[in-house]
View (cartoon, rainbow, N blue to C red):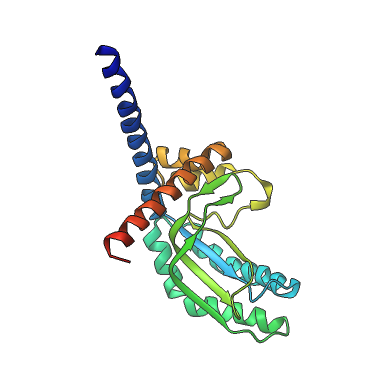
Length: 214
């Protein structure tokens, strides 16, 4: 009888423990998603010319926004600066397009965009909807480029593959220690955690659709 009880109780204990662990991961992910603004530049197409143009537009927009955003102390302050400069950003991007002898339309918006799990230097951000400054060039069907605009991580060398001290300070200024440790740790460990979160979100969305009778 005692042995049967142990056989039953151990799986229940493990299941409950796993549930608590996954809940903590999911909650932390939801918490810091709301603390970030991402910058998203989408090319007209995947041709070399259009991909090169995308990077030129990126550089011009970052060059323009950098002095205004690098000392921003809050996400609300950053959002306000972006909103006040939407038309200027659009004009700068359009001028760069015209300067390359092209005539694509340019759309600029501050809203929400859905991202897959992505690696940025040695930072891994989970999939989900993020507040995003989006610049769409032409048809906007080419490969995109992205970075984190708040806290201002767009202004570091992301090709170095490391997180420098200033980047760490910027992240720690808006994230809790627990949130920070989840994204700036061993890449494989983080990816595993966020893969679990993606599965949870898919299950949650499926349950919602079933409830709604879809």
